[in-house]
Structures are given as C-alpha cells and as structure tokens.
Image 1: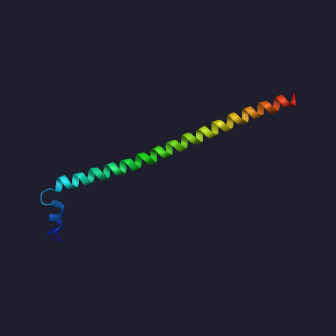
Image 2 (image 1 turned 90 degrees about the vertical axis):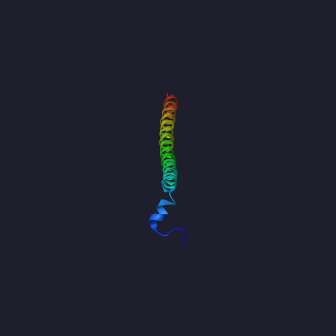
Image 3 (image 1 turned 60 degrees about the vertical axis):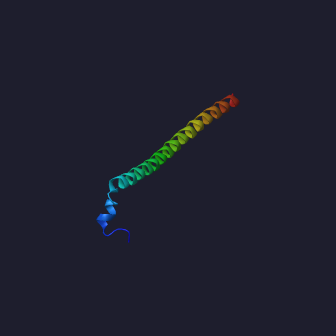
Length: 72
C-alpha cells in the first residue's frame, strides 16, 4: 500500500490541502453543471408547454370564427 495510514492518505505527503481542494472544486463544478442542465431542461419544457397551449387557444379561436362565418 502506498500510504501507511488513513491520515497519511488524507495528507497526501503534505499535498493534501491542494489535492482535496481540487477534488472538491471539481465535484462542485460537475454537480453545479448537472443542476443547471436539469433546471434549464425544466424551463425549456415549461416554455414549450406554454407555447403549445397558446397555439391551441389561437387555433381554436380561429376555427371558431370560421365556423360562425360559415353559418351566416
């Protein structure tokens, strides 16, 4: 084994603070990107659903007007 104890592993030959800070920042960035991507996808889906609803209302209003015109 490369290290004599768990404490030696954590200290990484006195490079521990640098190594663990780098790991921590890397995981923080990766999880931040995952969270941001998920939030962006949810926002996109909400916007698309709202657009579909607007289009459906617009199409039903237009078809409703043409039905009234054809009856007259």
